[in-house]
Image 1 (cartoon, one colour):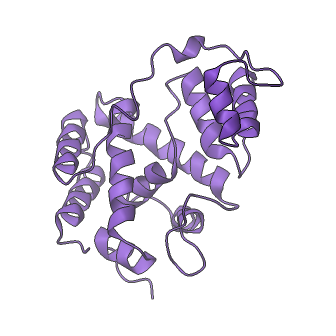
Image 2 (cartoon, helix red, strand yellow; image 1 turned 120 degrees about the vertical axis):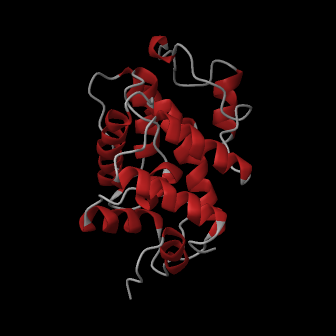
Length: 217
């Protein structure tokens, strides 16, 4: 998968739009539709719209109290669920390198001004946002690639919290410059784009080529 492929051309178009300040609402919608034609789109059945989440309450206790909680217990996610509930309920929650995705999601549920964040979203931002500093790029690489320069199964490592901060900062910049696009609309581009990139490449060298970057050596 190289820059001249349909996915590579889409990434190049987004890179150009961002560098020239033309990533507006229409450009985001166009790119989202083009990505869908390549077989990657936000699945409404898997991820239905989140409505009224600011009014959720934390009613969790020491053991499951309903079917949803019982399923999380069965899946071995009980501790993660409890921490997630605590982050939602606490006035000033603290993120760690091991729970930053759940932390970010809790923040999004509390206030939609906070973007949804995961490995696919930060991968997309890294690919299309040419204004990242060398340090920011290195932190993205540390988060997403292993020591053999292959994609990790998920974003992990000591740069996890820093990468979330990087993501929030630059997503805010993109939305502000878009002249009307919402973070939800941008998310519906970034998540499937990140999935497409990961599925289409295996190594950092392949990722570089797809993005049209010079070989780092």
